[in-house]
Length: 281
Image 1 (cartoon, rainbow, N blue to C red):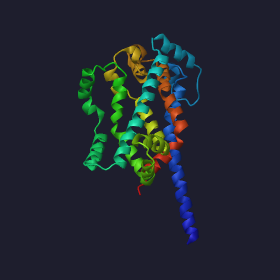
Image 2: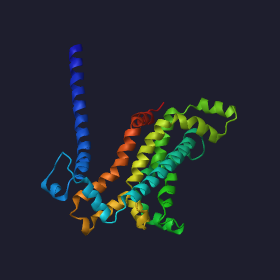
Image 3: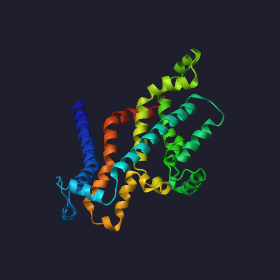
Image 4: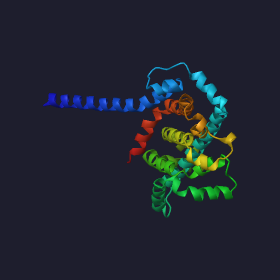
């Protein structure tokens, strides 16, 4: 009986690892082909798929520059917006989540349920009213319209609440209050250090979402010198670039490099952050 159990466990483990390998291949292959095609000419791409890089990377980059696409400026614009958005999202979302978890007030449950409802509403449903609101504030064609609204990021608040509920120690907070610490001091000096895994996980998701944010930026930003990198890549759809597939792939490759780097640096926090957020006492 023990041998049967051991054999079944081994077979199950083999199937699990096989399934994970398949998922890894499905995830990696498109990215690898994207990077490979960024080094190939349009003629080579039209001939079919290749898994080996070519020698036309510099030619594709020169082609992008010759068409007036300032990728360096677009990269710096995207980096500024993404980093600022990530900082604003993580800090204020954790601060709001901390208030929901630690304090008791009338309407707390209703407010928490309202946040869940906001998570399920797509941004596209409210984009007209949001644009009018930003216009009246004079924030159109301004990065502030992409950064400041993330102070009230419902999805990040929901994740932060789930995470803090699993690790907040009320006795530690009460002890800090007895010692005379202010509420903000407790949050900054006690909760924030304890919440680093959750904050890092939230930061990865916020950075990726902001970096890939084409829809809001396209609606709110009109000056080409303020275009983010995804917006510049979006201009490759024009007639002049339609057949320059190598240049298009290179532009797309530029947009995924920072995401890969951020994920490689902070990926170790994702599992621990999500696991902690899924545990309830």
